[in-house]
Length: 344
Image (spheres, rainbow, N blue to C red):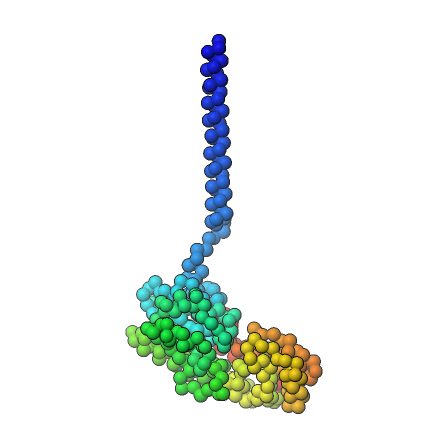
């Protein structure tokens, strides 16, 4: 009897042990699944790998459409490598991207990436970031505005000696060392020509395509220029005040006088004494409109407007927006409409 009890106890202990081991296995398995879900993608949510977003930001001339890029930042975290083995083009900032986008349309094997985000705006104080350096390392061509807009150009020229830099400012008359040349449609036409010539020199096999695309784009820009000339005749008030020194080229084409600039130094607000001087100037010159920009504060302009009765409007310097082929034309036409509203 004792022997039977001993055997029963032993069997019970073994069964209990098996049960406990089974429970522990289930717990361990459950924890592993939970940790996997926490570290990876949840069901129904797509996981984005580190390189995937960068790939979405690069436009290929082979598959390119009017959307330009799937990501508004235009940055390329994977160094801008072109898997097709074709020409890899990096642009310094938004307007250069839009110009080049029109030139490479339908050219097979060509990739285009904008180095900076559209929200960057002008590049006056821009410093190259690690992702910029990585993108430039594998680029074949770097398209820049020139005229002093890219303060980091010396670093690029020293570090990337084999990189072909296309300076789009050639053959353009610079006003008072002001680099905002693209806001003149006439200058933009020269810039498109310069970029197309540079790309053709680097990639002779596709030179004819670049030139044909550039000519088609220039035809649209010539039409835009004629529109500007006709609508400039409708403007009666000529004196304006702008937020910063972006618009002398645009003002010249619209026959306007920029009598003052609110913020002459990027990211530095004018002192109270300067605001007082600007207020008096607006009164004296009978300025009807003050123009700010989409990426800048309206505070100073509104302060002056309250004191003088002038109105505040927004002009687009075409340094941010959708990455589409018509972006530049859209911005200029919008500016013309704003001027007609403000100055007729």
